[in-house]
Length: 242
View 1: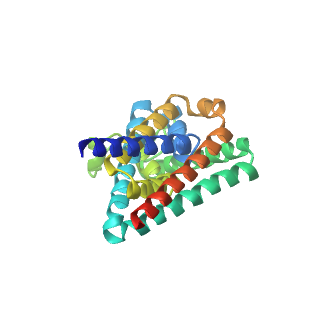
View 2 (view 1 turned 60 degrees about the vertical axis):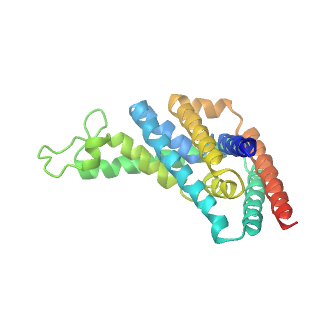
């Protein structure tokens, strides 16, 4: 029994870890961390972005774990298989129809636009920017945000931007499907580790890393991996039926 649990945990861990690595490098959340790290403390950006992705991973895994208690496990497996097939074919279709450099540039531009919009909103709320580009706070400080006393503004900005960008993303939905068909603890731990590795690479030099890592190769690998997960989930559903 213990060996079965350990095997299930290891399988869920490796599936989730591999899925995150091939789907998050070059993604919008990856570039958000890269853009913010160019202008702010790398530690604060990493803490906020990785914290948001870890929270999203746990939330998504719990949603996937709860699904079999609401729907029969057989249909949950079929639903997970359908999700994996859709994302797998979608990634491969995007490889065929779109140029890799154009995709990377659009993701970068979109992430940079989101960061600039958040900074503009912060400047508008707190006051005029200083010569270094950071907003100067008002001197009265009577209604200082309680969260800002615990975490830096950069941490909170990275957390909120990343959490919002990740919501509804294919990696979040894939995590839900994976947790519905694999060990939820393994899926959570593998996803968190994968996100931390991708975010760490982003804050250390995301643009350069994305330039050296072939986006096309990652997309093909991710598409094939999603299709393999789909076949496995379909087999599990048929096995439960028998």
